[in-house]
Image (tube, rainbow over all chains, first blue to last red; front, top):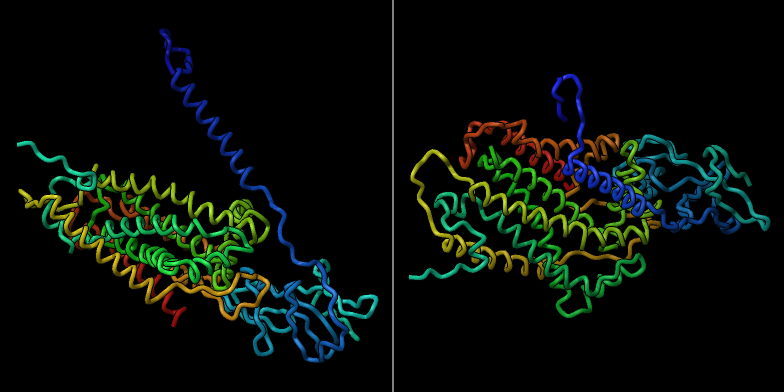
Length: 156
Length: 340
């Protein structure tokens, strides 16, 4: 920046050095953008099954709590019927383990009751429930695409 | 008489070193030992690269092969593992020594920052290396560590995408971790180590007291003798640890399984303990970042005095010393609570 003889007008001059520095800066920004885009490509993920057809309801006796690994869900059969809960802890995503009449997270100690409600933190929200229905040939289906409240049972 | 040209290794040292600060009981050789461990890591890591397969299906199998089939594979993997673990310890103690002797002050503050960056790189190296084992024991730490990224507001999801390479942990993740571990972090570490060493020489060599003059000095040959002895001792310790306490290895990671129990790698157990007691963003991201910022700000905020360099527990640096000791002690306590 220079001030001319009269001292009234400011004349901005772009020196060669400033121009080159500016070009460098712009190309650095442009390349960073490209690199971030390059790194952010979403490769096709190895998905869990969106639903699974299991055995006949009789295979899961009253009071049973069964882990279905293909859909990462617990299938529970109580007095009122069947329901399924996500087995993924709502805190940081560890798979919860079956404890005594409750679920325990091995990572940070969250506890959930069999209806998915938080008994003990750090988890803040309950386990989501998945739809349980019967297939045409009368077998149990767990569908992760349909969220239902755990209070909703498949009564057989 | 024509003087003999010093060899390159001698050349890396100042010709004369102050006797007091050149002694083992000033530095405990911690910086040098860390460098030597890195040399071991580079060498054994290069050997492991010849057999390791960075894919979800084959990674664990290839580590099993290195460990159980390939001649000396168990030793090489054991040395790589133990050098990595010891590096966390030696670099942390090196930082502690630098704080307690006021060696971060005045013009050395830039080198303090470079050291802090290197500490972060060491932890990233260790975490990615741990994950590359791809066995059941690492899967939950990997899941939690990456899910933590998602809790960061605004940029969390993009960062997760860049770190993991997909919308969940899988094939892409292992390739990315492998790339960072053997290439990305190696380049960053290389640049910062050379810079770190260069700054030590540029800032006048080992930090030393400025109040007594003339200073009694030793030649670099004497220091190099101690260094070579330390290299032997460290190598013997590494080989002994690798043979007597080999690193664990379980079956292939499968995130659909239910873990019996899930423990973070030992240097992050304190974070796991924190995470058990509150909001993931605060406990898992903000507190560690705050502690790192506090460490980095030592010469700029906690102790801006020019005096006290080279003096153990110097008065001027009390606040800095207490802060760093408190950070290390809290981390130790959190770790012990979780382990015991």
